[in-house]
Image (tube, rainbow, N blue to C red):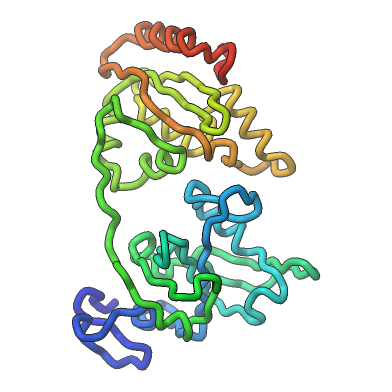
Length: 308
């Protein structure tokens, strides 16, 4: 692949120094498309921009739902009359990143329609490795018309590139200042930007608090033994309930009609914090006593989400 820091290819294939020619999405699509196993041209590409609509259960309501599964599910259903009549094979998915900024989420490969009604068209979309080195790093300016939510590759080629960079490393604030939304928790357990968090939370046992920010209900939990805080919170990131009885019930309630699928809508309003941390050699009995104390103090058995 061409060195994107020193050389870009314009749409016609002619080379130019990045310092003299403004870098556009078209430069990247042409360069990386030419290097693809099966060359990809601009005519093979549709660029789709998703924006958040808080409070709308049908649409993407916030960054906490940005999983591959959810974006795939959301994108594969389109509406006749409001979408491209003959959508090409590769769909470049951008997500609103504030103002006119749009960040690359990934690329989906279109294998054609699987169902069509008067109200909906369902496409067979599958994740593609095309542009994978730029996922999460590429930010483009969508343009003046932010109401337009998709463009064909030839039109989207004009979009200016604002940055190609890894996001900034997130410093660990100290155990007393840990406060994470569920979306942030999911990022923290798997994103290299949070390496300082991962190291710190993998070294301690502790008592943690989960608060539902919509109603104030709370859950007191513990992480003991070899599992540590990081291990326990990774379980929540995976399923939204970590095996806890009341939280698991919330997850099942959010999956009505889709019981065979993992649904985490119930968790998107959760906020995670630490009440107390212990060293790795602290006996489990001491951790258990602290957990029981906080359940009593915060009355989470009576008014919250603890069931024992």
